[in-house]
Image (cartoon, rainbow, N blue to C red; front, top):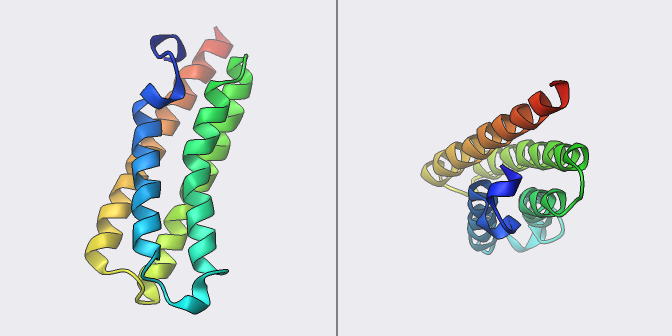
Length: 125
């Protein structure tokens, strides 16, 4: 998959992660002021970490390093899913927004899992 793309910005999973991070930033602008250093900061960091880890891993020189960064991206994806669930449960985002974002983050997780599996299969052959 890496050879097919010239840079990380062309990767479909990176594009999806980046666009969701932009959405997270917009949604969190409406969070209460007391959350600036709490949930707002946490969800922004975990969300942006997904695309950042994909970008960094793509720029590494080995498949093994790429896989490690994809694992990190997958972890940040799960963390972000929790943060948006918490935001919904606290009443900071509406159920409709939560469901849409949850579905999108689940899709990113599936794409990361598929890419990781594909790369790991190359190790074993």
